[in-house]
Image 1 (tube, rainbow, N blue to C red):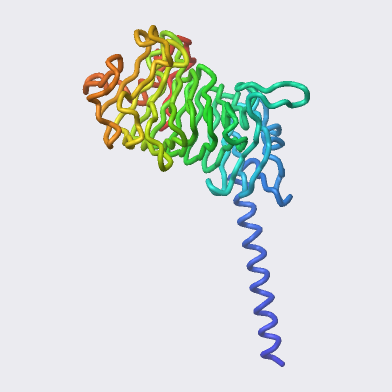
Image 2: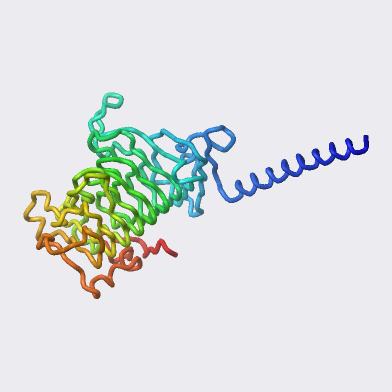
Length: 335
């Protein structure tokens, strides 16, 4: 009898310890994150958009949102007033923010365009995302943006961007840093006007087409800069251009990147705009891999020397004097 009471008390003690530790852990998580999103209804919100709406307007204090694993099919907007937001996913491959709009789709009587086809639109400054998959699941139906970025000082780390044509759109004239991410697509799947650095990313082509289509404003010192990235492709893909100019003053540079055999020997395309050859700035520096052979590169592209390449450091790329449109302050996303 005494032994039975001991066992009962022991089991009860274990249950109490487990329950109390669970409370401590839950409280600890809540202390770390301002808002928690999960689809099981046990957190603050079941919708990512609800969580974004709950962020205080123009708050200098950073709001941190934790998103638990799940597929969240929502067309999302982080509005201009929702500055300094961080979204952290529980697991990169298991937290999927997705939608399926595309250019030409009819929604409520209106025809969508590239600019309204986004799955997630970042209007606000100071946005950070980590461990999240951003997807446009419309398929190969034309322009279909997964993420559209308008804000300044935007960071993506350890994220995935899934789509086809026009996957990642840097719409604004702000600055964007993309680190250790995976980006896939078919045509012009990294495009836009921002000053953006892609560092240690995997860039995967799903079609014989073009990787970048920069529309860098005239007067910007930098446009798109790829540093230590790996360019890969689906099986059978064998003719992919590094970039073509959406606008005449497009700037795109690849530094110490590994270029796969799918890269077109000429490297770059003028988009049938001969005059753009005089105004674009397309360059490479110490790239490796079978696609890095430069003997057949177009004559109007450039191979940087050591002195020129030394300019391509984060502090200079994101400095206030790097853009024709004045920034309020210098920015270093690594600090």
